[in-house]
Image 1 (cartoon, rainbow, N blue to C red):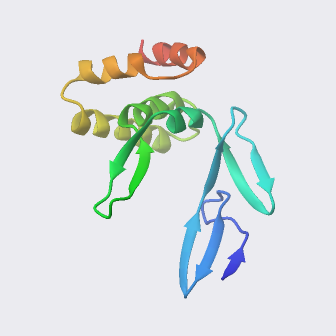
Image 2: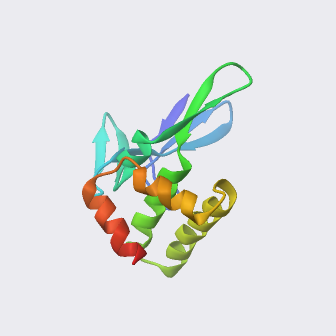
Length: 137
C-alpha cells in the first residue's frame, strides 16, 4: 500500500490511499472551535467548529451482517447546518446548507414542531443554543 499525503482537488486535508489500483480519499476531521489543522505523524486533521455535537448525538444502524455503524443523528445534522450556514463565504454554500436542512426536515420529521422540539432538547453547548435562537429570529 502506498500513502500519498496530499490535498484533494478541493484543498481539504486528506489521505490518499492507493490499494490494489483503487483510489480512496479519506478526510480526517476533529473538533476545534478555531478551525485549525493538526498534523500527527504525517496525518492532517481539519478542525471543524461544532463537530463535537455530531459526535455526541448519533444514531446506531444495525447492518444485515450483524455489525452496526453510528451516524450523526438527523437533528444534530440539522443543528450543525443551521449553525454554520451563516458563516459560509459563498452564497452557494449557504444555500446548500439550507437545502440540507429543508431536505431532512421534510423527509425525517412529521412536522416542523417535531423538529423544533427535538432541536430544543439536543445536547449542545449553551452558547451554540443562543446562536441558534438568534438565527431563527
